[in-house]
Length: 170
Length: 189
Image (cartoon, rainbow over all chains, first blue to last red):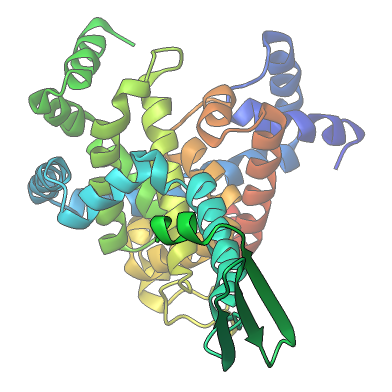
């Protein structure tokens, strides 16, 4: 290989692909006239092109395509009539309520709400059915009612100053 | 883009299936050839042709005419074929083992004029192509089979011209290495 071959080899592929400038083309062609190594490289690229192209051209020639067009038409028709699931999916896609950015925080908030409220329902509320003692004492001046809650150790005493009015309200 | 093609595209954008049929008639062989080159399976390549034209009908509204129509279509074909190839992840469809090398059978050697048509050689080329990384294979097919310029290849492959040249160079180098027995033999004739 000549010294200039290393320079030309960088251009040879571009020359083969017809991507060189006029100046580069002249440079390569002058070199090719006296260099069998670069001529061989060029021929090798030409043969490779034939080798790669020939099987693909032959594959095309062996094929008949009218039925492929029929399948294209069928495919287009099918896409024009969306299935139930496609309709549902497209509806879900366009409905803001079903967008991930909406339903994920919504579900998270609902879960938190449930977790917070459930213990409130099961919390033991004070029972007022515990045994108690009620006494009502009548007198001429005051009426007294005593309400004695044993378990809570609480005693409530009502003092009624005007028995007539109190009786009227009941 | 010539006037006739512009008119077809415009009709197709309005939903005219007859216009799509004309585009199909014009391009289906090229689309098939690219698809076949990438996936190397007849049935898969035909599926890709079908898928590409359905996609084209659906998305042709997006074609604004800023690039050539065929680079738009080839790009769609390439992407569909590469997606397909990645999904299938098939081994090269061949029963030829690597260790067999590239010694051609006797009758092939005796008839060099018909050698390119021989099935065995075709299969070897197909296997060699299949061993290339998909980007290099794509570059080789677009250049060697479809004859696209570097600029057009860059548009189809979605990369710059330097990357195109690099993929093409290494693709050629590797496939020449794989087929060197045959290429060398032919040089010595």
